[in-house]
Image (cartoon, rainbow, N blue to C red; front, side, top):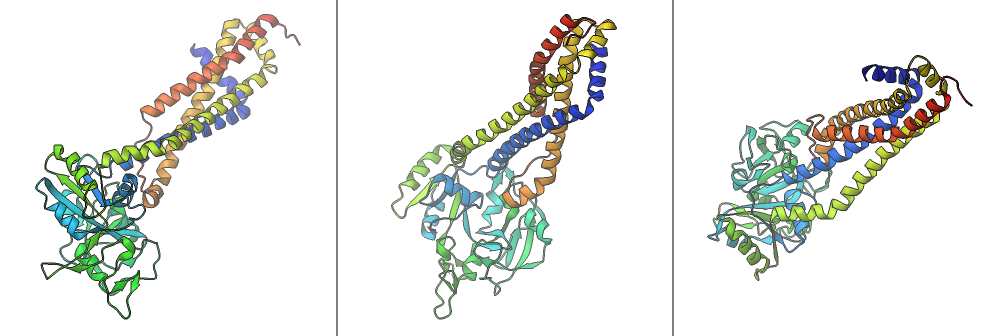
Length: 430
């Protein structure tokens, strides 16, 4: 078998122009298939690892997927706020272990700003119940402090002690900056591979203070009424404590229960709450609903990529079949030096396998190189964190499947070459 493999490799080298084109076609198709599958699994993993250990997400009456997207992934906006009174009512419930308020609506140089409390750094979990850690500094201590995610600090070159200002709205540019209230970066979070990395965190008191003289999305000139933030941010109100302002409303809040048995009861109670229309969703259930929606497109991309691989294999088969007539003299020479028809059959199959193997190796290498190159862009713009672990089990299975399919496809020209070899013998028949 080894001499035949060497002979097949030399035969392909003698026809390296056509063989290179065949390998290129297979490599492109494999690159597409590996890229699609890696991005599919990467997207699922990025979404699944964003939040962990949270029992309920509560917001204004909305669909579960919309609530999950804007509260956890910072995608989209809430239709309205949850009143501070409702939040406090839930947080004081005896079955509730902790709550994390979330207030969205502002931005900093294209990055979302989230108003929250110190409990966020104590109770928020991601991945496999991992805690938030600081690479520098620590949590905010007053209304002038801010904590930035790892991606924000890296992209904008921030370090602790730097001064930043926020802006109204969530666009990259804003005509409504909050220049009157600068913030000092008190801490920088360690990378998490989640939207936390692309978020600027400030206190709820700060959100209330910077919007005290806003109305209808702009600073009020005649009436310093508190700003409702277009239904997406807190209106701002004085705290009962007197010294600190607290918002009149928040975008959403996360809930951790003392007992898992009470999760469904609390969810039902919140969905039926008569004080105001609320929605309470279980993060894992909402994620499953999200993947059911995008699953059709998800599978369609994979099918398209598989069809491209099939087209590459058909191109290989066509190339080998087209060369059979020209290679009848070659087969006759092989017969003259002692090769049997079975050797000719095996040679053609080995050529197909070598072409496919070369294409798979080139395609897998190209796919992982491209993904490694675009990973920072996917992370910063779309929040998709592709783990660059290199070729894995999926790539080995793919290589086996493509080479196996190529061997099956190679049986057709191998059989024709076998028949020609038997018919021609040592003399070529035209």
